[in-house]
Length: 302
Image (tube, rainbow, N blue to C red; front, side, top):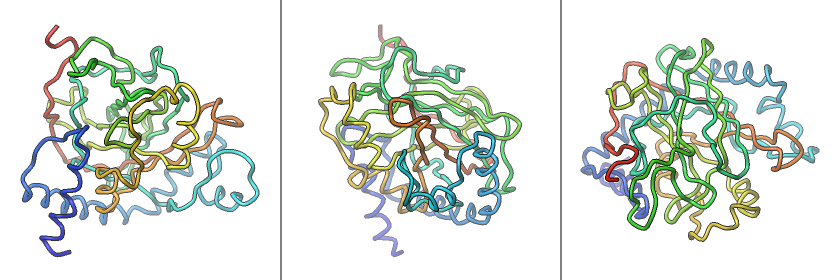
């Protein structure tokens, strides 16, 4: 790709005015884009290990593999089906997708981050894979945070986004010896300028501000599933203008650089009311040492 074209492409990452990202020079953005593309290409060499990694996780739950889901999609009457996601798909965003303005530097070590928030329950099965060795990464702290059903982040309130002490939909836990962590949350809502997404960081230590981050990224859901979720309460109370996946500059930028940030999902029961099980595999560089730039902390300014 021509350098000028590359700069024009990645500048789209700043289109979401309601969700401003830290300002970088065009040269810095171009460098990150090139580095991420290189990591994406490198991760593809792990294709057999990725398939085996995900198949082992699915076998333990008794859920079908992506290949099996495709084979039965034409006759299945139940939940979401895999369509265009390759069997060896892997999310390798790091650290081009920044933590965003709604990160708070207070890590909560917990697997269930819902608290009293209502919405469609989501059980995330997150696997961490080292793109250098193609082996699972144990004892990595996987942190997630996202907006609630009406587009509000825990810890922020009011038109000025003042920081308060609310902790809902924030937290994380460590991967086990097999490189897997399970996190329970609710389906994220949307807000102006952004489609539904879940922020994530993976760290070699508990404190992400320590400079030990291996990965900074965002997870997304298929638009058909977004349609289904946002058509039911409490998501119908969301008064924000909705942005579709195809119009989200940050998501589209991630796709262009070779990332696959979509969560592969299925219903835990017969329909949405039973909740959603989501699988995603993250490729990380275990030699990386990135830091969070956001300095916000709960209760700041009170």
